[in-house]
Length: 109
Image (cartoon, rainbow, N blue to C red; front, side, top):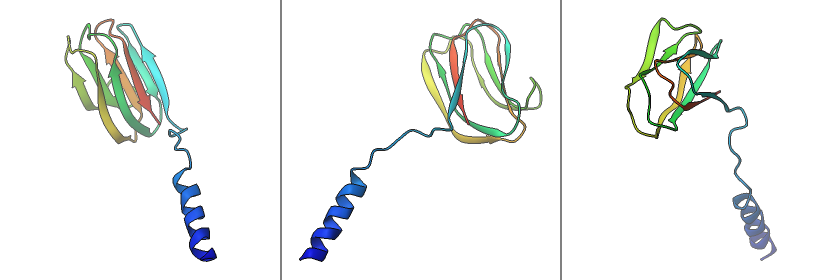
């Protein structure tokens, strides 16, 4: 009986352990028409949250400059929402070009 109780207690403590967000996640807020190097070396693109209807197209590159492989183009006038990229590996970096004064947050690692 002691073994069963000890096992139950150990499982209860494990299941009750708090879950924390990934501490390596970082974010960059963009609010103007600009080119933003979010990460200048390899990393992971997690999500892009548009916090106000986009004023212009938003282009995301796998690069430390506004050239090369395009990961996504979010069209102008998209409504507030979050675009989940999972853990999209970007070996060359992450650059975001906003054609208008769009307000968005880029989450990356």
